[in-house]
Image 1 (cartoon, one colour):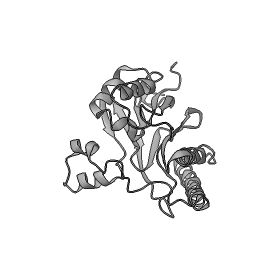
Image 2: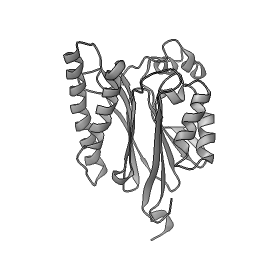
Image 3: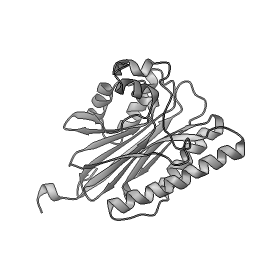
Image 4: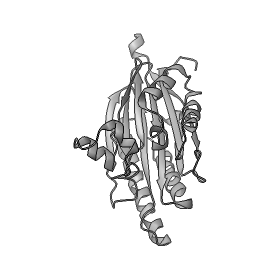
Length: 249
């Protein structure tokens, strides 16, 4: 077997913090290299509703039936997320509130390929050969303005509507979740994070930190740097490296 054909495994770490301003952490994350699944979620709804939403969405992913093949595994995740979405609607109705929801970004790996799933403005990036590439595309009001050429991308984070998402779990009867498949290469590093990180750290700074930190240290380093710059929101990061199975982390 050639080096290129050696099976790759995910080595990962995650961290979360309520930030410097918020009193409650409404983020949640999933770090399950044993089943090839990682996720971050950013809850909406205020007080205990937001953190309930993010935990419910992450739990739905973690408890989804496992499948060896990528297509069936993705279908299983989508089915469980549909059930979670219905629970969010029922919970909002029982509490008499208009919305209990959550953004979500997830990474599923099987046999040399991975699928990124996302809804909302939490993001997933891939660092390959020193170049950071954003895989997800924000479902947000400001991203729509950028796509339409009405707003410069470097002005998006400071726009008054920067926190307005156009899609999320719990907002529609059937969640509209985007997906993208890609081949995994030896040495690929993925970052999953909530917008509390990306609103404070430019992508160039994220790339610099990801390039020089170990996988175990990177999530906390990203959070520490975010807190130095204000951390106006909850902040969560999960970092995943793909290395040959015989590699010692």
